Length: 224
Image 1 (cartoon, rainbow, N blue to C red):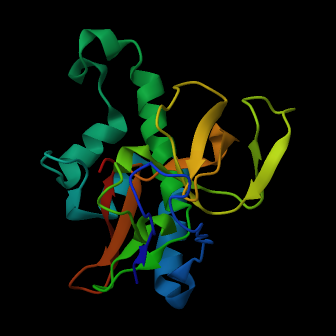
Image 2 (image 1 turned 120 degrees about the vertical axis):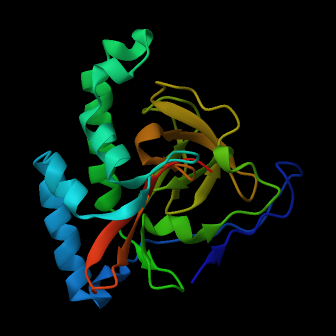
């Protein structure tokens, strides 16, 4: 089941739309075999066991928009040989490798949902359909309950409200900033801690059963 975000206009007008909340619900509990697979895969990811993770993936796992996918690309992403990087990033290979593993672990740890084809997707907010008028790279999901919306980019600034599981719009994301200026869908503006903002173009993953009835990791990708 997909949820459609209501947005009356593209970032204009005093009120864009009614606010909507999308609390997380993990549908994985509907299938104990999926829960067991996810737990086992997460254990292998936590152990940074490259070959075990590759063995639990689809033979045609989708990993990038325009890439070849498959186990060879997955293994390359997990190992990240510095020699495959341009010279400017070669010294950062260890950090980039760990970031990829961490993103995979974090994504697989999120609640998820079954789509109409029986595929299981994480995180659960990926089922929200954004309006065509909204640039998806400006949309962020607020991952917590009662997250403070502050008057300024300061943890001691007055609280304008407590926000739970909504979509926020960030026109100008500031890399490395602790707080981001956000716009809620009813036009409310303020600042929110970066830790609670998940980009709607961020990482998502999907499990699918093979012809033999075994769950496999078949998608791990980011982007629009």
